[in-house]
Length: 237
Image 1 (tube, rainbow, N blue to C red):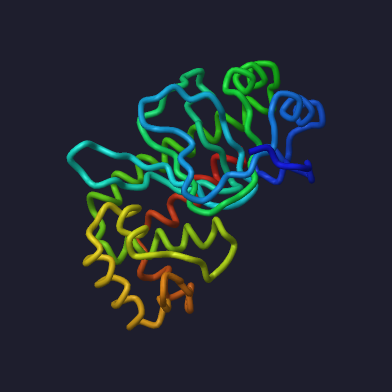
Image 2 (cartoon, one colour):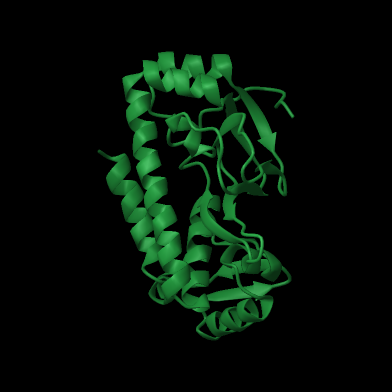
């Protein structure tokens, strides 16, 4: 639904640095909306109508195959956008986008976004750089799922989730972790127990507390650091 008031809606790292004219065009063709937890922004294979620039929250891009468990390709927050394929003029994506934590977002029709990109050199550079970031993160997700164990992947996911919500404690169920990592809940329970024994985190009644971020970083697979490095290096060029 439409948000009742526009209070500095551009709290998004991709569009904050843009010039005033580009901001005006984004607001002219877009609107600030509230994205509710549990809402799916798109289904795999359907035509995408809007792109979203979240001002916070967490949105999971989830790949689902008919005979396999779903798996999260990446988690998007205020550092990025959803419907990245529209930046290339492609309005169909093979994955679902699901809101995990409610947030405000600037929603803009994909055609207006693409037209604005073509007319604005700075915006074009930002969006093209972010496409490169997402391609890198998608490739990293494949490597991670293939080579790293549940405990390593869980540590990396929790660190990323913590980054997106800017907090060391947050709501997180075993069912959600299992869905994001594409594993059984028994595997999540075992990994969570081991991480608690290492005193890196505390898990209680669907709530996660990161007690020792440095120790959790040592457990995490290198994919977490690689994703952060990719974003920083590509978005700074």
